[in-house]
Image 1 (cartoon, rainbow, N blue to C red):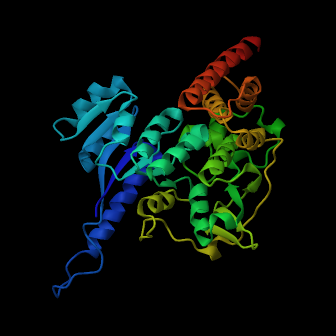
Image 2: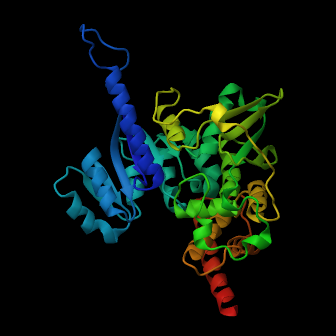
Length: 410
Protein backbone atom coordinates (compact mmCIF):
# COMPACT_ATOMS: atom_id res chain seq x y z
CA UNK A 1 0.00 0.00 0.00
CA UNK A 2 1.05 3.61 -0.49
CA UNK A 3 2.89 5.39 2.31
CA UNK A 4 1.72 8.99 2.64
CA UNK A 5 4.44 11.28 3.96
CA UNK A 6 4.46 14.69 5.62
CA UNK A 7 7.82 16.49 5.75
CA UNK A 8 8.17 19.23 8.35
CA UNK A 9 11.09 21.34 7.15
CA UNK A 10 11.28 20.22 3.52
CA UNK A 11 13.68 22.99 2.41
CA UNK A 12 16.45 22.15 4.90
CA UNK A 13 19.23 19.63 4.29
CA UNK A 14 17.29 16.71 5.82
CA UNK A 15 14.09 17.64 4.02
CA UNK A 16 15.81 17.92 0.65
CA UNK A 17 17.56 14.58 1.15
CA UNK A 18 14.28 12.97 2.21
CA UNK A 19 12.70 14.05 -1.08
CA UNK A 20 15.70 12.61 -2.97
CA UNK A 21 15.32 9.33 -1.10
CA UNK A 22 11.59 9.16 -1.81
CA UNK A 23 12.12 9.86 -5.51
CA UNK A 24 14.69 7.05 -5.69
CA UNK A 25 12.50 4.61 -3.75
CA UNK A 26 9.53 5.29 -5.99
CA UNK A 27 11.62 4.78 -9.12
CA UNK A 28 13.05 1.53 -7.76
CA UNK A 29 9.62 0.21 -6.75
CA UNK A 30 8.16 1.21 -10.12
CA UNK A 31 10.91 -0.65 -11.98
CA UNK A 32 10.31 -3.77 -9.90
CA UNK A 33 6.67 -3.77 -10.86
CA UNK A 34 7.14 -3.39 -14.62
CA UNK A 35 5.85 -6.04 -16.99
CA UNK A 36 8.61 -8.12 -18.60
CA UNK A 37 8.99 -8.67 -22.34
CA UNK A 38 7.30 -12.08 -22.14
CA UNK A 39 4.25 -10.64 -20.40
CA UNK A 40 5.26 -11.80 -16.91
CA UNK A 41 5.27 -9.60 -13.81
CA UNK A 42 8.50 -8.80 -12.02
CA UNK A 43 8.66 -9.27 -8.27
CA UNK A 44 7.75 -6.20 -6.29
CA UNK A 45 4.68 -4.02 -6.02
CA UNK A 46 4.56 -0.93 -8.19
CA UNK A 47 1.84 0.52 -5.96
CA UNK A 48 4.00 0.34 -2.82
CA UNK A 49 5.31 3.86 -3.26
CA UNK A 50 5.75 6.97 -1.13
CA UNK A 51 3.39 9.88 -1.72
CA UNK A 52 4.18 13.38 -0.47
CA UNK A 53 1.00 14.81 1.07
CA UNK A 54 2.36 17.86 2.91
CA UNK A 55 5.49 20.02 3.01
CA UNK A 56 6.56 22.94 5.17
CA UNK A 57 9.16 25.70 5.27
CA UNK A 58 9.75 28.89 7.22
CA UNK A 59 11.42 31.36 4.86
CA UNK A 60 12.62 29.54 1.75
CA UNK A 61 9.56 30.37 -0.34
CA UNK A 62 11.15 29.80 -3.74
CA UNK A 63 12.34 26.27 -2.97
CA UNK A 64 9.05 25.33 -1.29
CA UNK A 65 7.17 26.51 -4.37
CA UNK A 66 9.44 24.38 -6.59
CA UNK A 67 8.77 21.36 -4.37
CA UNK A 68 5.01 21.98 -4.54
CA UNK A 69 5.07 22.02 -8.33
CA UNK A 70 7.22 18.89 -8.49
CA UNK A 71 5.61 16.70 -5.81
CA UNK A 72 2.05 18.12 -5.85
CA UNK A 73 1.30 17.75 -2.12
CA UNK A 74 -2.23 18.32 -0.84
CA UNK A 75 -0.92 20.85 1.71
CA UNK A 76 2.00 23.27 1.96
CA UNK A 77 2.73 25.26 5.13
CA UNK A 78 4.80 28.43 5.33
CA UNK A 79 5.28 29.11 9.02
CA UNK A 80 6.43 32.73 8.58
CA UNK A 81 3.17 34.58 7.72
CA UNK A 82 5.12 37.33 5.95
CA UNK A 83 5.92 34.82 3.19
CA UNK A 84 2.32 33.71 2.57
CA UNK A 85 1.48 36.07 -0.31
CA UNK A 86 4.75 35.33 -2.11
CA UNK A 87 4.17 31.58 -1.83
CA UNK A 88 0.62 31.93 -3.15
CA UNK A 89 1.97 33.89 -6.09
CA UNK A 90 4.67 31.32 -6.88
CA UNK A 91 2.40 28.31 -6.45
CA UNK A 92 -0.20 29.84 -8.74
CA UNK A 93 -2.98 27.45 -9.72
CA UNK A 94 -1.38 24.34 -8.22
CA UNK A 95 -3.95 22.15 -6.49
CA UNK A 96 -2.30 22.57 -3.08
CA UNK A 97 -3.86 24.16 0.00
CA UNK A 98 -1.54 26.80 1.47
CA UNK A 99 -1.42 27.15 5.26
CA UNK A 100 0.53 29.76 7.19
CA UNK A 101 1.75 30.65 10.68
CA UNK A 102 3.49 28.60 13.37
CA UNK A 103 0.34 26.57 14.02
CA UNK A 104 0.33 25.33 10.43
CA UNK A 105 3.03 22.82 11.40
CA UNK A 106 0.62 21.25 13.87
CA UNK A 107 -2.16 21.24 11.26
CA UNK A 108 -0.20 19.25 8.71
CA UNK A 109 1.36 16.96 11.35
CA UNK A 110 -2.07 15.60 12.28
CA UNK A 111 -3.84 15.39 8.92
CA UNK A 112 -5.76 12.16 8.38
CA UNK A 113 -4.01 11.55 5.06
CA UNK A 114 -0.59 10.98 6.70
CA UNK A 115 1.08 7.66 7.52
CA UNK A 116 4.59 9.02 8.24
CA UNK A 117 5.54 12.42 9.64
CA UNK A 118 9.20 13.29 9.10
CA UNK A 119 10.17 16.02 11.58
CA UNK A 120 13.18 18.01 10.38
CA UNK A 121 12.44 21.43 11.85
CA UNK A 122 15.52 22.63 13.72
CA UNK A 123 15.00 23.95 17.24
CA UNK A 124 12.03 23.94 19.60
CA UNK A 125 9.58 25.02 16.88
CA UNK A 126 8.66 21.44 15.94
CA UNK A 127 7.82 20.14 19.42
CA UNK A 128 4.04 20.72 19.33
CA UNK A 129 3.85 19.24 15.84
CA UNK A 130 5.71 16.11 16.96
CA UNK A 131 3.31 15.68 19.89
CA UNK A 132 0.33 16.19 17.56
CA UNK A 133 1.60 13.46 15.22
CA UNK A 134 2.27 11.14 18.17
CA UNK A 135 -1.31 11.62 19.42
CA UNK A 136 -2.55 10.57 15.99
CA UNK A 137 -0.52 7.35 16.18
CA UNK A 138 1.62 8.21 13.18
CA UNK A 139 5.07 6.85 12.45
CA UNK A 140 7.39 9.65 13.52
CA UNK A 141 10.71 9.89 11.71
CA UNK A 142 12.55 12.39 13.89
CA UNK A 143 15.60 14.21 12.57
CA UNK A 144 15.56 17.18 14.93
CA UNK A 145 17.00 16.47 18.37
CA UNK A 146 15.04 19.12 20.21
CA UNK A 147 11.61 17.47 20.71
CA UNK A 148 13.18 14.54 22.55
CA UNK A 149 15.67 16.77 24.36
CA UNK A 150 13.06 19.26 25.59
CA UNK A 151 10.22 16.84 26.27
CA UNK A 152 11.60 13.33 25.97
CA UNK A 153 9.41 11.77 28.64
CA UNK A 154 6.28 13.49 27.31
CA UNK A 155 6.97 12.53 23.68
CA UNK A 156 7.73 8.89 24.47
CA UNK A 157 4.71 8.51 26.77
CA UNK A 158 2.42 10.11 24.17
CA UNK A 159 3.77 7.83 21.45
CA UNK A 160 3.35 4.71 23.60
CA UNK A 161 -0.21 5.66 24.59
CA UNK A 162 -1.29 6.15 20.97
CA UNK A 163 0.66 3.40 19.21
CA UNK A 164 3.01 5.75 17.39
CA UNK A 165 6.36 4.36 16.26
CA UNK A 166 9.36 6.68 16.69
CA UNK A 167 12.20 6.12 14.24
CA UNK A 168 15.33 8.25 14.67
CA UNK A 169 16.97 9.87 11.65
CA UNK A 170 19.98 11.25 13.50
CA UNK A 171 22.77 9.04 12.14
CA UNK A 172 23.95 8.06 15.62
CA UNK A 173 20.51 7.19 16.98
CA UNK A 174 19.57 5.37 13.80
CA UNK A 175 22.75 3.33 14.23
CA UNK A 176 21.80 2.48 17.80
CA UNK A 177 18.26 1.56 16.76
CA UNK A 178 19.62 -0.73 14.04
CA UNK A 179 22.22 -2.33 16.31
CA UNK A 180 19.61 -2.99 18.99
CA UNK A 181 17.82 -5.36 16.62
CA UNK A 182 20.57 -7.85 17.54
CA UNK A 183 19.18 -8.39 21.04
CA UNK A 184 16.44 -7.55 23.52
CA UNK A 185 16.30 -4.21 25.38
CA UNK A 186 17.11 -5.83 28.73
CA UNK A 187 20.23 -7.41 27.17
CA UNK A 188 21.83 -4.03 26.41
CA UNK A 189 24.77 -3.19 28.66
CA UNK A 190 25.50 0.29 27.28
CA UNK A 191 25.33 2.40 24.16
CA UNK A 192 28.27 4.25 22.65
CA UNK A 193 27.66 7.39 20.63
CA UNK A 194 30.41 8.34 18.21
CA UNK A 195 31.33 11.84 17.11
CA UNK A 196 33.64 13.18 14.42
CA UNK A 197 34.86 15.71 16.97
CA UNK A 198 34.05 18.62 14.68
CA UNK A 199 36.60 21.11 13.35
CA UNK A 200 38.30 21.58 16.73
CA UNK A 201 38.61 18.03 18.04
CA UNK A 202 42.35 18.40 18.81
CA UNK A 203 42.08 21.91 20.23
CA UNK A 204 42.44 23.04 23.83
CA UNK A 205 40.20 25.62 25.43
CA UNK A 206 42.73 28.42 24.99
CA UNK A 207 42.86 27.69 21.25
CA UNK A 208 39.13 28.38 20.95
CA UNK A 209 39.08 31.82 22.52
CA UNK A 210 39.14 33.72 19.22
CA UNK A 211 37.40 31.25 16.91
CA UNK A 212 35.52 32.98 14.08
CA UNK A 213 32.11 32.06 12.72
CA UNK A 214 33.73 30.94 9.46
CA UNK A 215 36.13 28.61 11.28
CA UNK A 216 33.33 27.10 13.36
CA UNK A 217 31.22 26.47 10.24
CA UNK A 218 34.03 24.55 8.49
CA UNK A 219 33.01 21.00 9.44
CA UNK A 220 35.51 18.38 8.21
CA UNK A 221 32.95 15.65 7.40
CA UNK A 222 29.27 16.62 7.35
CA UNK A 223 27.47 19.27 5.27
CA UNK A 224 24.79 20.59 7.63
CA UNK A 225 22.88 23.75 8.46
CA UNK A 226 24.65 26.53 10.42
CA UNK A 227 23.06 25.84 13.81
CA UNK A 228 23.87 22.12 13.78
CA UNK A 229 27.38 22.84 12.48
CA UNK A 230 28.10 25.21 15.37
CA UNK A 231 26.72 22.59 17.78
CA UNK A 232 29.22 20.13 16.32
CA UNK A 233 32.05 22.61 16.82
CA UNK A 234 31.16 23.03 20.52
CA UNK A 235 30.22 19.31 20.83
CA UNK A 236 26.85 20.47 22.09
CA UNK A 237 25.34 18.29 19.38
CA UNK A 238 26.70 15.26 21.22
CA UNK A 239 25.43 16.59 24.55
CA UNK A 240 21.96 16.91 23.04
CA UNK A 241 22.27 13.40 21.58
CA UNK A 242 23.08 11.97 25.02
CA UNK A 243 19.84 13.45 26.36
CA UNK A 244 17.93 12.27 23.30
CA UNK A 245 19.30 8.74 23.65
CA UNK A 246 18.39 8.67 27.32
CA UNK A 247 14.68 8.95 26.38
CA UNK A 248 14.61 7.28 23.00
CA UNK A 249 16.16 4.05 24.28
CA UNK A 250 15.10 4.32 27.97
CA UNK A 251 18.77 4.25 28.94
CA UNK A 252 20.17 6.01 32.02
CA UNK A 253 22.97 8.49 31.42
CA UNK A 254 25.47 6.28 33.24
CA UNK A 255 25.04 3.64 30.50
CA UNK A 256 25.77 6.07 27.68
CA UNK A 257 29.31 6.81 26.46
CA UNK A 258 30.77 9.08 23.80
CA UNK A 259 33.84 8.34 21.68
CA UNK A 260 35.54 10.59 19.13
CA UNK A 261 35.77 8.75 15.80
CA UNK A 262 37.13 11.13 13.14
CA UNK A 263 36.50 8.81 10.19
CA UNK A 264 32.71 8.93 10.85
CA UNK A 265 32.21 5.41 9.50
CA UNK A 266 31.02 3.71 12.70
CA UNK A 267 27.98 5.80 13.55
CA UNK A 268 27.39 4.30 16.99
CA UNK A 269 27.59 1.00 18.85
CA UNK A 270 25.60 -1.11 21.29
CA UNK A 271 27.30 -3.32 23.85
CA UNK A 272 25.29 -6.31 25.11
CA UNK A 273 25.57 -8.05 28.46
CA UNK A 274 27.50 -10.99 26.96
CA UNK A 275 30.25 -8.63 25.79
CA UNK A 276 29.18 -8.50 22.13
CA UNK A 277 29.49 -5.05 20.59
CA UNK A 278 27.31 -4.39 17.52
CA UNK A 279 28.12 -1.40 15.31
CA UNK A 280 26.37 0.15 12.32
CA UNK A 281 28.80 1.28 9.63
CA UNK A 282 28.34 3.26 6.43
CA UNK A 283 29.77 6.23 4.61
CA UNK A 284 28.63 9.53 6.17
CA UNK A 285 25.42 10.10 4.22
CA UNK A 286 22.13 11.12 5.85
CA UNK A 287 20.15 9.45 3.05
CA UNK A 288 20.69 6.05 4.66
CA UNK A 289 19.08 6.77 8.08
CA UNK A 290 16.32 8.75 6.33
CA UNK A 291 15.51 5.77 4.12
CA UNK A 292 15.62 3.28 6.99
CA UNK A 293 13.12 5.37 8.95
CA UNK A 294 10.79 5.41 5.94
CA UNK A 295 11.05 1.72 4.98
CA UNK A 296 11.45 0.04 8.40
CA UNK A 297 11.17 -2.85 9.13
CA UNK A 298 12.18 -3.54 5.52
CA UNK A 299 15.47 -2.66 3.83
CA UNK A 300 15.36 -1.58 0.20
CA UNK A 301 18.04 -0.62 -2.34
CA UNK A 302 18.93 3.06 -1.99
CA UNK A 303 21.12 5.88 -3.23
CA UNK A 304 23.79 5.74 -0.51
CA UNK A 305 27.26 4.84 -1.81
CA UNK A 306 28.62 1.50 -0.63
CA UNK A 307 31.27 1.29 2.07
CA UNK A 308 34.61 -0.18 1.00
CA UNK A 309 36.55 -1.06 4.13
CA UNK A 310 39.84 -1.47 2.29
CA UNK A 311 39.59 2.18 1.23
CA UNK A 312 38.93 3.36 4.79
CA UNK A 313 42.20 1.70 5.89
CA UNK A 314 41.80 2.28 9.64
CA UNK A 315 39.47 3.36 12.43
CA UNK A 316 40.59 5.59 15.29
CA UNK A 317 38.87 6.35 18.58
CA UNK A 318 39.54 8.66 21.51
CA UNK A 319 37.72 9.89 24.57
CA UNK A 320 36.44 13.47 24.27
CA UNK A 321 38.17 16.24 26.21
CA UNK A 322 35.47 17.25 28.70
CA UNK A 323 37.50 20.20 29.97
CA UNK A 324 37.75 21.80 26.53
CA UNK A 325 34.24 20.76 25.49
CA UNK A 326 32.45 21.40 28.74
CA UNK A 327 29.03 21.39 27.06
CA UNK A 328 29.28 17.61 26.70
CA UNK A 329 29.85 17.21 30.43
CA UNK A 330 26.86 19.46 31.10
CA UNK A 331 24.77 17.29 28.76
CA UNK A 332 25.43 14.19 30.85
CA UNK A 333 24.46 16.12 34.00
CA UNK A 334 21.22 17.28 32.39
CA UNK A 335 20.42 13.74 31.20
CA UNK A 336 20.69 12.56 34.79
CA UNK A 337 18.52 15.38 36.19
CA UNK A 338 15.78 15.43 33.53
CA UNK A 339 12.72 17.62 34.00
CA UNK A 340 12.87 21.24 32.86
CA UNK A 341 16.70 21.28 32.96
CA UNK A 342 16.85 19.84 29.44
CA UNK A 343 14.47 22.49 28.10
CA UNK A 344 16.69 25.21 29.61
CA UNK A 345 19.83 23.53 28.28
CA UNK A 346 18.50 23.34 24.74
CA UNK A 347 16.94 26.82 24.66
CA UNK A 348 20.01 28.51 26.11
CA UNK A 349 22.18 26.83 23.51
CA UNK A 350 19.86 27.80 20.64
CA UNK A 351 19.80 31.42 21.76
CA UNK A 352 23.56 31.56 22.31
CA UNK A 353 24.34 30.00 18.92
CA UNK A 354 22.11 32.56 17.25
CA UNK A 355 24.03 35.36 18.99
CA UNK A 356 27.36 33.85 17.97
CA UNK A 357 26.32 33.54 14.33
CA UNK A 358 25.25 37.20 14.46
CA UNK A 359 28.69 38.18 15.79
CA UNK A 360 27.35 39.39 19.14
CA UNK A 361 29.19 36.94 21.41
CA UNK A 362 32.40 34.91 21.25
CA UNK A 363 32.64 31.18 20.64
CA UNK A 364 33.40 30.23 24.25
CA UNK A 365 30.53 32.42 25.46
CA UNK A 366 28.07 29.86 24.08
CA UNK A 367 28.79 27.24 26.74
CA UNK A 368 29.33 29.84 29.46
CA UNK A 369 25.84 31.24 28.87
CA UNK A 370 24.31 27.76 28.84
CA UNK A 371 25.97 26.95 32.16
CA UNK A 372 24.83 30.26 33.64
CA UNK A 373 21.22 29.41 32.78
CA UNK A 374 21.48 25.94 34.31
CA UNK A 375 22.97 27.38 37.51
CA UNK A 376 20.17 29.92 37.86
CA UNK A 377 17.34 27.52 37.00
CA UNK A 378 15.15 25.81 39.59
CA UNK A 379 14.40 22.48 37.96
CA UNK A 380 10.92 20.93 37.94
CA UNK A 381 11.20 17.15 37.76
CA UNK A 382 7.62 16.38 36.65
CA UNK A 383 6.85 19.03 34.07
CA UNK A 384 4.03 19.27 31.56
CA UNK A 385 4.21 20.95 28.17
CA UNK A 386 3.38 24.41 29.55
CA UNK A 387 6.16 24.25 32.15
CA UNK A 388 8.66 23.01 29.57
CA UNK A 389 7.81 25.80 27.14
CA UNK A 390 7.97 28.39 29.92
CA UNK A 391 11.43 27.13 30.90
CA UNK A 392 12.41 27.41 27.24
CA UNK A 393 11.29 31.07 27.06
CA UNK A 394 12.96 31.92 30.38
CA UNK A 395 16.32 30.56 29.24
CA UNK A 396 16.20 32.45 25.94
CA UNK A 397 15.47 35.73 27.72
CA UNK A 398 18.26 35.17 30.21
CA UNK A 399 20.80 34.42 27.46
CA UNK A 400 19.94 37.60 25.55
CA UNK A 401 20.01 39.75 28.70
CA UNK A 402 23.26 38.23 29.96
CA UNK A 403 24.94 38.57 26.55
CA UNK A 404 23.95 42.24 26.41
CA UNK A 405 25.52 42.85 29.81
CA UNK A 406 28.69 41.03 28.73
CA UNK A 407 28.88 43.16 25.60
CA UNK A 408 28.46 46.34 27.57
CA UNK A 409 31.23 45.29 29.94
CA UNK A 410 33.79 44.61 27.22
